[in-house]
Image 1 (cartoon, each protein chain N blue to C red):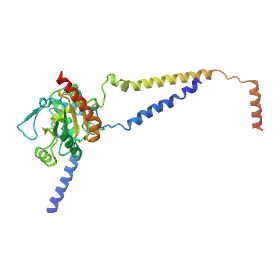
Image 2: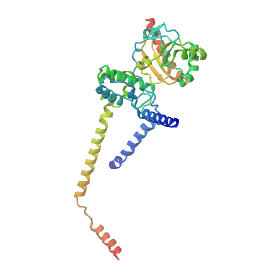
Image 3: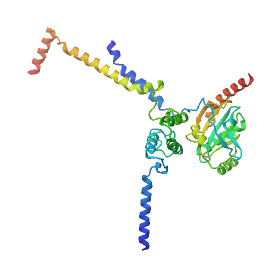
Length: 159
Length: 185
């Protein structure tokens, strides 16, 4: 009987350990509604942790990310708009926290650069193809001298 | 001849990119610009670390050029920074206000009595609320505040002699000169 109880408790323990391993940090916060939860998680996913810079607020376990995550959740539950929350974050941690930078004079190169490069590429390709076509269209004339030389070489090769 | 020069364009592009990327190798991604530079210290009302009955507000920090230093007992880099701060405190160049960030009061008080206290006074930011408003993302961080209570510079990381001599001290001298000039007029 004792061994049976020990076995069961070991099993329960392993289940609880496994359970906590897959749990997300979100579980500790009770949202007012499912919609709020969805919106808050989306927002937190789009904000970067200032401490561990390649993780978003959900991924990161650093204390500052925990604080900011909670702040986002509470602000969403308080009915704040996305824009307000993003302003709150950028006024403290700078534009850096946005994974998707704002469209402004400073970031035009970032947003429009790829389109510009694509256009330049297309232009170069277009010019190149046109040049090829023009030069290909003209029949290459060969002088009589060259033709004689060529015949001679061909004859030698066929021997 | 003109066509030959065109052939060099990719090489030139490559070299320009190479220079940029090479420079990028020596940038520190941890060194972020603070969004608060040029803005006043955020409003706060917090207890003094040494005395829970004494309330410190953002108004308390105005009047002279000062250094705000975010620290905690759980922060190893703060221990590295500590002797440098002690030395600066002895030189008495400007008041150093400590922000005890997400820490326990007894631990912090014990640490200061054991290791020495470089701070003019300490703000007890137990919940990290002031830290959040300041955009603190890890201790230690230091903020240079002018006599009007405007944040002029943020340094993330421990202050040592090199940072002090090369960056902070020249800025402090400049700010103090400005403060004197405004005080005289």
